[in-house]
Amino acid sequence: MTRRLFLPMVAALALVLGVAACGGDDDDEGAAEATTETTQATTDTEASGGGGGGGGQTLTLTADPSGALAFDTTELTASSGEVTIELVNDSGIQHNVEVEGNGVEEESETITSGSTDLTVTLDPGEYEFYCAVDGHKDAGMEGTLTVN
Image (cartoon, rainbow, N blue to C red):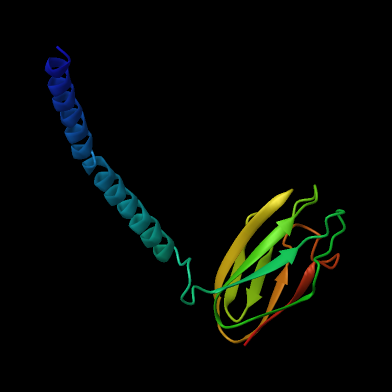
């Protein structure tokens, strides 16, 4: 009687192992989906100008966190081409940044307690940057951006 049960159990075990081995195809589909998602993310980054390969230069400009009407610097330097100025404002006072000169006049969003970016394409020369909120430039929130 033991022999009669042994052979069907071995056959059932072989069947279970055979079915489990056939299930490996799902991993290939997951790998293909992951590859597609990675390719799409890379394409999105390249389309937005991110990633390597000369997508421009980013400068950080910080407003005084205590609320004083001042930037952390009055001089910025960049290479010609696409330049992004990241304005960091940790104060409760509204600030923005405007770049003006050589036919350029662009202004960022006005923010309180956060950060914003202004991206401009600049030729070599000198530009003025300042906070365009009423009275802030006159109080000293201004500087020179030199582009080489």
